[in-house]
Amino acid sequence: DINGNTTWKKQAVIYKKYKFDQLNEAFIHELKMHRKLNFYSRFVQILGISLDESAEECLLIMQHAEDGNLRQYLKSHFLELSWDDKIKLSYQITEGIKYLHNEDILHQNLNPNNIVIHKNDAKIVLDFVKSTESGYSSDYGMISYIDPKLLENYSYEYDKKSDIYSLGVLMWEITSGYPPKTENISKSHNIDGCRETPIPVEYLDLCESCWNNEPDKRPSISLVFNKLVEMNKNSASQFINLIKKHTRIINRNELSDMEKIDGGHFGIISKATWKDTKVICKKLVNNESICNKPIEALRHELEMHRRLDFCQRIIRILGISLDESTKEYSLIIQYADSGNLRKYLENNFSTLTWNDKIKLAYQITEGIKFLQGEKILHRDLHSGNIVVHQGEAKIIDLGIAKSTETHTNIHSGVFGSLPYIDPKILEDHTYKYNYKSDIYSLGVLMWELSSGKPPFFGESESVLKYRLVCGHREKPESDTPDEYLNLYILCWDSEPDARPSINQVFNKLVKLGRMRGIQDFQDIKCDDDDMQGKNITIKKK
Image (cartoon, rainbow, N blue to C red; front, side, top):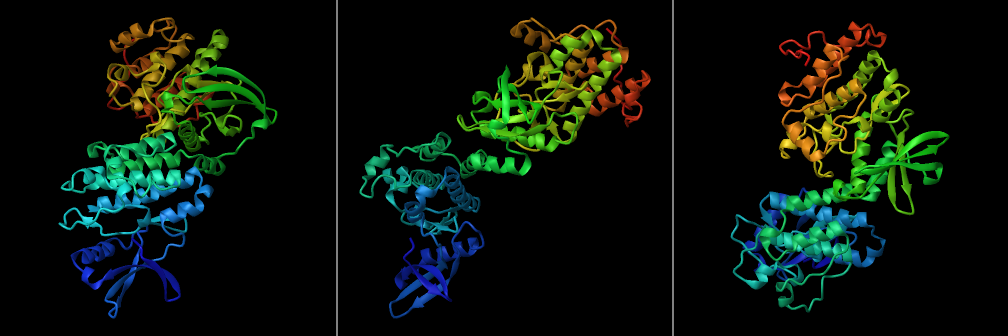
């Protein structure tokens, strides 16, 4: 532990004191570890060594920490710390331990005296650390932070999971603000599995997993680190910063005439008026479908929209509103004057020409093409998630959309409306949703445009699931143009590899529009050679 403070070259420093007879293999080992890790920001830097021959002492001179050790810092500042501050401290300590473990180094004495705070950043004091390749060992530190396996059996070998135990207790102290138990605690209290109780649920679960009595059940440092990263991303202040950076905050009192119009599995949809303009409000429901992470789920949807905000085929987010009474956030979204595609077809199908239907199919396809160009899977395409505004189709609800370049575990289960779900997913829940899964949904949407009816309306889900996996599909309408029919039949093929790419669907629809003399298609660029080597024309059933 740190022995004291002093001044060197007009700057404050801290020191650890050793008698000459302590300058043994352990001391040399510590110097080597400091040298190896001295450049890393999560560790207190060693500045040099001072020898006092008269006292036969050696001082290890180290970087000063303006707020002292962790226990002193919590005692002085705990009431000022927000939950975000506590997450940040836990994250910083974990980041340091992660670096140690990646270098195959054990700390062996993690406790609040060996964590210091400098300019609101936590740094680890390297106190008799050892490489697991080394034969050196040391005293294992303050009793409340010691792995019970070591107290139970002195022949038990300290390992990385012992550091994890100490980290769990440190995380508890950060969230509680006071030392775990008392200093005169008996060893048997630790051995019997008695622990202090943290407060926040996610943090509690993580602490408890770290201090599990069985080392094999404790998480790796990488897993602890990743969970803290998630918590940090999910924090309210981080979310507010994201909102301020990328969209506007709309005060709840700016919204009037609020009226609920739908309540889906993921959220409650209402319509309202904002600045004399009709808008849609989407409030996420905190349930298992979003893994009980409403802020992270909302953040995810906001980030998806941010990447696509300039695409006219994707409905726009206007801002985010906070209900102060419930602390719930709502996305404020552009209003579509004709409602979703299902309602639009119910109200207007009898007046739609085939040219109108082809244009709508093209507009939906253009939106999906843009998504896939941004490497985004929608994963929930159906007629409730397509809206029509001023006669043009737009894609909505990017709540479970997923970038193919990143990992997310916000949403759980199989997504979508059953008639639109890729049968490969229904057949095998381990099958990974991919671009061709969105193509399948597009094929069903194209059939719906041709018929004006919802697919498999009135069929029981249990029977329908079996029939879809077996290759059953809706019957084509007799007036469907062959080119359009052949295209959507290929889109909903049971074999993903047989389905066309989104570019092929796009190009085929453009050519069909040109062939029918639709003016809107004459100036749209498409690849005339996109079908070479792939025959997507099949006979009409």
